[in-house]
Length: 146
Image (cartoon, rainbow, N blue to C red; front, side, top):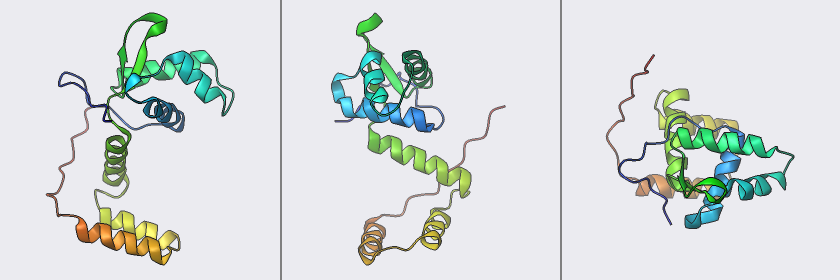
């Protein structure tokens, strides 16, 4: 189920660090019910040692940047993703292509193809995806504020 922001919610800002992505994965896994900071801390601490205050700070930063929204108050507050995982992946990938490859998906694919060997099944899947993809108008880059 998609966790889309209401019309008045901010669009998520920036990218995600490894720790933020790990936290978001737990939020996405929780689904529409959301997840508490305590449950997030418990989920993350099964993988590695992490302080509960670190989880709380990360959640607060993600909420401020528009990646999470809070439902409820206090210790019972549930956090939900403002984008589903697929939409977030698309947004982050597009940002990476824009920044690192000057917006060129061709340059990205060339880099991937040149850096590793692909199985025939992977190449066939890529060809199928390309054949099914409709051309889209070029994206315009947002001007940096500063």
